[in-house]
Image (cartoon, rainbow, N blue to C red; front, side, top):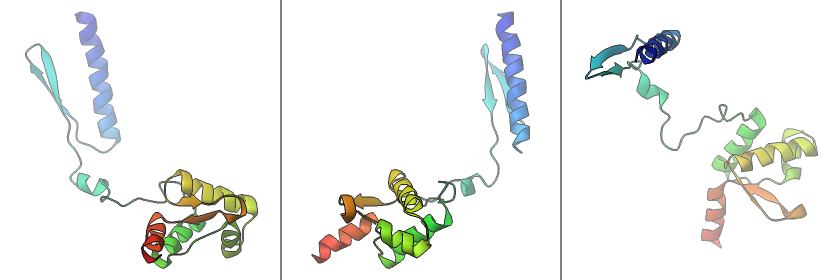
Length: 134
């Protein structure tokens, strides 16, 4: 039993230290029926830390400015990219274009359609719009 209390003591000190290091108020510890309860205090603006539904911080995903601009064009202008069009638009190599576009696909930001030279990259709603107008 004493060993458990020692471990709790070290753990509670670490918890307090981490809270303070992150700018939070020290938590309260209260003994309750042979155990204890910990109350953590969130920052007042905690709701600002939660992204709005459907919104993604593209920079946090690790996207570069080319990729962000390509997404903007796809969403706002309905643009569809091929590797060649991406290379020409952003003045990059074939390898860079492929890497950028594949990363967008892997992150679920765009979809890839077709095979070989007929591959095109588009925002998913663009494909839905094409089907509606077909």
